[in-house]
Image (cartoon, rainbow, N blue to C red; front, side, top):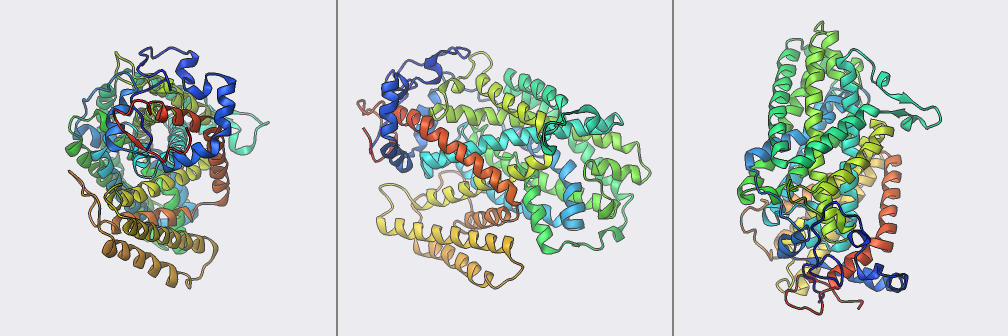
Length: 591
């Protein structure tokens, strides 16, 4: 059994630095493995043993809540209520997805059935919301899904998820920032490319440089650094204005509705509906940002369920009504893929309304960027508390109560991506990372309910593992068959296997843990369904995006094997000589 206490310098425990702006080697590589080249090469020779230890390591709830959180040096201010969280959730989600991707998917992928695509994506997102909520109530820390996975699936899986979490936020921020430029151009009666710099030497997807996106991200960064509560107040006001604009779009748009435009309803068939759902999942990205604010809520047990579920219900309703309005206003073949709502009003003889739409879109995208900036910094802060990335990023500024270093680093990365990369490339890659993470959180929830060290015996543990393997295998096979074939024969095997394996877990394995305050209903059925839907939607994403996803995962593994593994291992093992508090379980494979 490995142990760890509140150490930030691997062998120099207790020397927490409060200088949030210092940049010495001790701030970046303080661990024992990096104190000399000799130490580093010895660590590399132990990579196999250390990796086995980290794969087998699971953190504990109280570790994430106390020891790990303490490594930031200062506490984040607890000043958010459920009301703040609902508006943060609305502000985080309703943005570029509905205002840009709706037109693109309706015209080219699903037709008017884009409404159903939003319902499918919404169901998947809501299932994930339930899983996130139980974790956030019981482990209210800034790390969000990273902390949840570290507790239930172990250090290694948490790191792979962490890399994709950070990628998700960087890509979503970049995509929204580029969309901000598009609607800003509409507001000024210009084409978006009028504000972009064309570089012929770069490939097509990366040749339109977007300086406005960089400026917007910089201003958002400053706001996120200054105050979380101040960001909340701004988001609250901006989101109210945004919802008012959405209500205007729906009411004014329906006065120009023509039911004939809904025919044909699904010109691209069922496959088109699910393909669009996979991409439109991008429109729901952001609700997990609310879970990262759990550390700053006054009463997590009450505030988080109200905040997460309330925000998702409002968002799903808005999306479906907006998609219906758009498809009633124009035939799907006439919908503009870049600024669908603005062009639809112009075509209906209400050209003035496009300025209202553009203004509302800009408001929505601004709040999405703001909430994303707040959330991604908190993810990175908690990840760096474990030393998987440099602990310098975990510093919380004493005066503002915000993680300044993490905020700046994440938004610089976002600005670089936003400067170069087109929205289409970003949306598909983002959906893969998001669906992958949501699937892991649902899997982790089942593990949390059915496996507790010292409580679950080997027989029930093995039954749980077999059930989870069959749930995953049947879901992956269903998704792969959907992507590769128009037939149906394989579903007669995969779907019964999924039902039987979930039922076996439900009836044959006793739950080892009962939620203390708020729990997901219908376990294991609800999280198992979440796993299946998320994997199925992954099967509808194009192959090129999976190649990019694979490359990013390979980069993560290289970084982990050469740096992250050794830094986190040293941090976890540094206090083995001080067995005052056993806080992480490991097999102690390497000394």
